Amino acid sequence: MDYKRSRAGFPFLSVIAAAGLSLALAGCSSDRYFMVPKKDLTELNSSVQSQRATLVTMEGNAAVRHEQLLQREELSTQSILEAIENKVEKPVCPPVQPQRACPTLEDTGRADRLKGKVIVGEVEKFYLADPGLVYTARIDSGAETSSLDARNITRFERDGSNWVRFDVPVPGTDELVTMEKEISRRVRIIQASAEDSERRVVVELQFAIGDHKQVAEFTLADRSNLTYEVLIGRNVLRDVMLIDVGKEFATELPKNLKRNGDDV
Image (cartoon, rainbow, N blue to C red):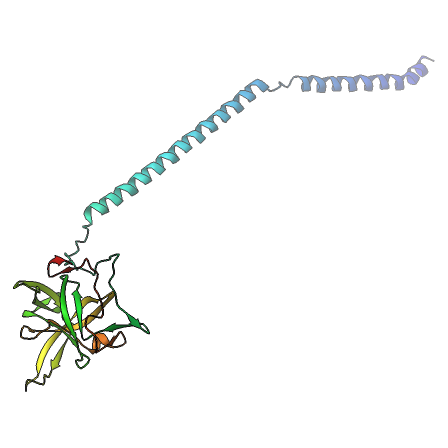
Protein backbone atom coordinates (compact mmCIF):
# COMPACT_ATOMS: atom_id res chain seq x y z
CA MET A 1 0.00 0.00 0.00
CA ASP A 2 2.79 2.25 0.95
CA TYR A 3 4.74 1.02 -2.00
CA LYS A 4 2.00 1.95 -4.38
CA ARG A 5 1.76 5.40 -2.95
CA SER A 6 5.36 5.79 -3.32
CA ARG A 7 5.23 4.68 -6.95
CA ALA A 8 2.28 6.79 -7.64
CA GLY A 9 3.89 9.83 -6.15
CA PHE A 10 7.17 9.43 -8.05
CA PRO A 11 6.08 11.21 -11.16
CA PHE A 12 5.01 14.15 -9.09
CA LEU A 13 8.35 14.30 -7.36
CA SER A 14 10.10 14.04 -10.73
CA VAL A 15 8.14 17.01 -12.03
CA ILE A 16 9.00 19.01 -8.95
CA ALA A 17 12.69 18.14 -9.30
CA ALA A 18 12.78 19.08 -12.95
CA ALA A 19 11.11 22.39 -12.22
CA GLY A 20 13.58 23.12 -9.45
CA LEU A 21 16.49 22.29 -11.76
CA SER A 22 15.13 24.64 -14.45
CA LEU A 23 14.75 27.48 -11.95
CA ALA A 24 18.29 26.93 -10.72
CA LEU A 25 19.69 27.02 -14.23
CA ALA A 26 17.67 30.12 -15.08
CA GLY A 27 18.91 31.83 -11.94
CA CYS A 28 22.51 31.14 -12.90
CA SER A 29 21.97 32.58 -16.33
CA SER A 30 20.27 35.64 -14.91
CA ASP A 31 23.03 36.17 -12.38
CA ARG A 32 25.68 35.80 -15.11
CA TYR A 33 23.94 38.47 -17.34
CA PHE A 34 23.60 41.03 -14.57
CA MET A 35 27.21 40.53 -13.50
CA VAL A 36 28.57 41.94 -16.83
CA PRO A 37 29.65 45.65 -16.22
CA LYS A 38 28.15 48.34 -18.45
CA LYS A 39 30.35 50.84 -20.41
CA ASP A 40 30.67 54.36 -19.10
CA LEU A 41 29.14 56.66 -21.78
CA THR A 42 30.73 59.78 -20.25
CA GLU A 43 34.21 58.46 -20.96
CA LEU A 44 33.22 57.64 -24.56
CA ASN A 45 31.84 61.14 -25.11
CA SER A 46 35.03 62.66 -23.69
CA SER A 47 37.10 60.59 -26.10
CA VAL A 48 34.96 61.69 -29.07
CA GLN A 49 35.26 65.35 -28.06
CA SER A 50 39.04 65.00 -27.69
CA GLN A 51 39.38 63.46 -31.15
CA ARG A 52 37.19 66.17 -32.66
CA ALA A 53 39.35 68.90 -31.11
CA THR A 54 42.45 67.15 -32.43
CA LEU A 55 40.98 67.11 -35.97
CA VAL A 56 40.09 70.82 -35.76
CA THR A 57 43.63 71.63 -34.63
CA MET A 58 45.13 69.55 -37.47
CA GLU A 59 42.88 71.29 -40.00
CA GLY A 60 43.96 74.72 -38.72
CA ASN A 61 47.62 73.74 -38.86
CA ALA A 62 47.21 72.48 -42.41
CA ALA A 63 45.61 75.78 -43.50
CA VAL A 64 48.45 77.77 -41.92
CA ARG A 65 51.08 75.61 -43.63
CA HIS A 66 49.29 75.94 -46.99
CA GLU A 67 49.29 79.75 -46.62
CA GLN A 68 52.99 79.71 -45.70
CA LEU A 69 53.81 77.59 -48.75
CA LEU A 70 51.91 80.00 -51.01
CA GLN A 71 53.79 82.97 -49.54
CA ARG A 72 57.13 81.22 -49.95
CA GLU A 73 56.31 80.35 -53.57
CA GLU A 74 55.30 83.96 -54.28
CA LEU A 75 58.48 85.30 -52.67
CA SER A 76 60.59 82.78 -54.58
CA THR A 77 58.97 83.74 -57.91
CA GLN A 78 59.44 87.45 -57.18
CA SER A 79 63.08 86.88 -56.24
CA ILE A 80 63.71 84.99 -59.48
CA LEU A 81 62.08 87.75 -61.55
CA GLU A 82 64.11 90.42 -59.74
CA ALA A 83 67.29 88.44 -60.30
CA ILE A 84 66.51 88.09 -64.02
CA GLU A 85 65.72 91.81 -64.30
CA ASN A 86 68.97 92.74 -62.55
CA LYS A 87 71.19 90.36 -64.51
CA VAL A 88 69.73 90.87 -67.98
CA GLU A 89 71.00 94.07 -69.51
CA LYS A 90 68.50 96.15 -71.37
CA PRO A 91 69.40 96.69 -75.02
CA VAL A 92 70.67 100.13 -75.84
CA CYS A 93 69.35 101.47 -79.13
CA PRO A 94 71.81 103.44 -81.23
CA PRO A 95 71.13 107.16 -81.50
CA VAL A 96 68.89 108.09 -84.38
CA GLN A 97 69.54 111.23 -86.33
CA PRO A 98 66.53 113.51 -86.10
CA GLN A 99 64.56 113.95 -89.27
CA ARG A 100 62.76 117.20 -89.78
CA ALA A 101 59.43 116.33 -91.31
CA CYS A 102 57.08 118.68 -93.03
CA PRO A 103 55.35 120.63 -90.24
CA THR A 104 51.69 120.16 -89.48
CA LEU A 105 50.20 123.60 -89.91
CA GLU A 106 46.78 125.13 -90.01
CA ASP A 107 47.84 126.85 -93.22
CA THR A 108 48.84 123.80 -95.26
CA GLY A 109 49.55 125.73 -98.44
CA ARG A 110 47.68 125.64 -101.72
CA ALA A 111 47.79 123.56 -104.88
CA ASP A 112 45.09 123.38 -107.54
CA ARG A 113 44.27 119.91 -108.80
CA LEU A 114 42.82 118.39 -111.93
CA LYS A 115 41.51 114.83 -111.62
CA GLY A 116 43.51 114.44 -108.44
CA LYS A 117 46.82 115.66 -109.91
CA VAL A 118 48.60 118.79 -108.71
CA ILE A 119 48.84 121.57 -111.30
CA VAL A 120 52.33 123.10 -111.32
CA GLY A 121 53.99 125.78 -113.40
CA GLU A 122 57.43 125.76 -114.96
CA VAL A 123 58.94 127.08 -111.71
CA GLU A 124 57.74 126.30 -108.18
CA LYS A 125 58.79 126.82 -104.58
CA PHE A 126 60.23 123.59 -103.16
CA TYR A 127 60.44 122.81 -99.41
CA LEU A 128 63.19 120.34 -98.41
CA ALA A 129 61.97 118.79 -95.15
CA ASP A 130 65.44 118.02 -93.84
CA PRO A 131 67.05 120.51 -93.16
CA GLY A 132 63.96 122.70 -93.63
CA LEU A 133 65.03 124.95 -96.52
CA VAL A 134 63.01 126.41 -99.35
CA TYR A 135 64.48 126.39 -102.86
CA THR A 136 63.25 127.43 -106.27
CA ALA A 137 62.72 124.35 -108.42
CA ARG A 138 62.53 124.04 -112.18
CA ILE A 139 59.89 121.61 -113.46
CA ASP A 140 61.34 119.62 -116.37
CA SER A 141 59.40 116.76 -117.96
CA GLY A 142 62.45 115.96 -120.10
CA ALA A 143 64.51 114.80 -117.12
CA GLU A 144 63.94 111.26 -115.90
CA THR A 145 65.18 111.72 -112.31
CA SER A 146 64.93 114.79 -110.08
CA SER A 147 68.15 116.43 -108.92
CA LEU A 148 69.36 118.48 -105.90
CA ASP A 149 72.28 120.86 -105.65
CA ALA A 150 74.89 119.14 -103.45
CA ARG A 151 78.54 119.95 -102.65
CA ASN A 152 81.40 117.99 -101.05
CA ILE A 153 79.83 114.63 -101.79
CA THR A 154 81.56 111.87 -99.80
CA ARG A 155 80.57 108.22 -99.79
CA PHE A 156 81.07 106.05 -96.70
CA GLU A 157 79.85 102.82 -95.14
CA ARG A 158 77.59 102.56 -92.08
CA ASP A 159 76.38 99.27 -90.56
CA GLY A 160 77.21 97.44 -93.78
CA SER A 161 75.23 99.88 -95.96
CA ASN A 162 76.44 102.53 -98.40
CA TRP A 163 75.82 106.09 -97.25
CA VAL A 164 76.70 109.54 -98.55
CA ARG A 165 77.53 112.79 -96.77
CA PHE A 166 76.96 116.05 -98.64
CA ASP A 167 76.39 119.77 -98.15
CA VAL A 168 73.42 121.73 -99.43
CA PRO A 169 73.45 125.52 -99.81
CA VAL A 170 71.32 127.82 -97.69
CA PRO A 171 69.55 130.04 -100.26
CA GLY A 172 70.54 133.71 -100.11
CA THR A 173 73.69 133.01 -98.05
CA ASP A 174 77.11 131.45 -98.43
CA GLU A 175 76.37 128.88 -95.73
CA LEU A 176 76.16 125.14 -96.26
CA VAL A 177 74.22 122.54 -94.29
CA THR A 178 75.56 118.98 -94.02
CA MET A 179 73.22 116.04 -94.62
CA GLU A 180 73.71 112.26 -94.48
CA LYS A 181 71.55 109.80 -96.38
CA GLU A 182 71.65 106.13 -97.29
CA ILE A 183 72.34 105.59 -100.99
CA SER A 184 69.34 104.15 -102.81
CA ARG A 185 71.14 103.42 -106.09
CA ARG A 186 73.51 104.89 -108.67
CA VAL A 187 72.60 106.18 -112.11
CA ARG A 188 74.51 107.14 -115.23
CA ILE A 189 73.62 110.61 -116.51
CA ILE A 190 74.36 111.70 -120.09
CA GLN A 191 74.11 115.46 -120.58
CA ALA A 192 73.71 117.09 -123.96
CA SER A 193 76.48 119.58 -123.19
CA ALA A 194 79.00 116.88 -122.23
CA GLU A 195 80.50 114.04 -124.23
CA ASP A 196 81.12 111.67 -121.34
CA SER A 197 78.46 110.27 -119.03
CA GLU A 198 78.48 110.97 -115.30
CA ARG A 199 77.65 108.53 -112.49
CA ARG A 200 75.63 110.00 -109.62
CA VAL A 201 74.36 108.65 -106.33
CA VAL A 202 70.62 108.67 -105.67
CA VAL A 203 69.02 109.31 -102.27
CA GLU A 204 65.44 109.58 -101.06
CA LEU A 205 64.30 112.99 -99.80
CA GLN A 206 61.08 114.24 -98.30
CA PHE A 207 59.75 117.47 -99.77
CA ALA A 208 56.65 119.57 -100.31
CA ILE A 209 55.32 121.57 -103.22
CA GLY A 210 52.28 123.61 -102.25
CA ASP A 211 50.20 121.40 -99.94
CA HIS A 212 51.52 118.25 -101.61
CA LYS A 213 54.03 116.20 -99.54
CA GLN A 214 56.03 113.36 -101.01
CA VAL A 215 59.18 111.23 -100.71
CA ALA A 216 61.08 110.71 -103.96
CA GLU A 217 64.54 109.91 -105.34
CA PHE A 218 66.97 112.72 -106.16
CA THR A 219 70.40 112.55 -107.76
CA LEU A 220 73.12 114.62 -106.08
CA ALA A 221 75.05 117.00 -108.32
CA ASP A 222 76.81 120.33 -108.08
CA ARG A 223 74.34 122.80 -109.62
CA SER A 224 76.14 125.95 -108.50
CA ASN A 225 76.59 127.02 -112.13
CA LEU A 226 72.85 126.57 -112.84
CA THR A 227 69.96 128.92 -112.17
CA TYR A 228 67.86 126.59 -110.01
CA GLU A 229 69.03 124.50 -107.04
CA VAL A 230 66.40 121.80 -107.65
CA LEU A 231 65.21 120.03 -110.79
CA ILE A 232 61.89 118.14 -110.68
CA GLY A 233 61.85 115.30 -113.22
CA ARG A 234 59.43 112.67 -114.40
CA ASN A 235 59.91 110.39 -111.39
CA VAL A 236 58.03 113.01 -109.33
CA LEU A 237 55.68 114.26 -112.02
CA ARG A 238 54.47 110.82 -113.12
CA ASP A 239 50.87 110.16 -111.99
CA VAL A 240 51.11 113.04 -109.47
CA MET A 241 51.50 116.41 -111.25
CA LEU A 242 50.43 118.18 -114.41
CA ILE A 243 52.51 121.05 -115.90
CA ASP A 244 50.83 124.28 -116.97
CA VAL A 245 53.57 125.72 -119.18
CA GLY A 246 51.95 129.14 -119.15
CA LYS A 247 52.34 129.58 -115.37
CA GLU A 248 55.00 129.99 -112.72
CA PHE A 249 54.48 129.44 -109.00
CA ALA A 250 51.06 127.90 -109.46
CA THR A 251 51.28 126.53 -105.93
CA GLU A 252 51.84 128.18 -102.54
CA LEU A 253 53.73 126.80 -99.55
CA PRO A 254 52.37 127.46 -96.02
CA LYS A 255 53.08 131.07 -95.12
CA ASN A 256 54.80 130.33 -91.82
CA LEU A 257 57.37 127.94 -93.30
CA LYS A 258 60.89 129.22 -92.85
CA ARG A 259 62.37 130.33 -96.10
CA ASN A 260 66.04 131.11 -96.20
CA GLY A 261 66.09 131.38 -92.39
CA ASP A 262 63.27 133.97 -92.16
CA ASP A 263 59.55 133.57 -91.48
CA VAL A 264 57.45 134.49 -94.47
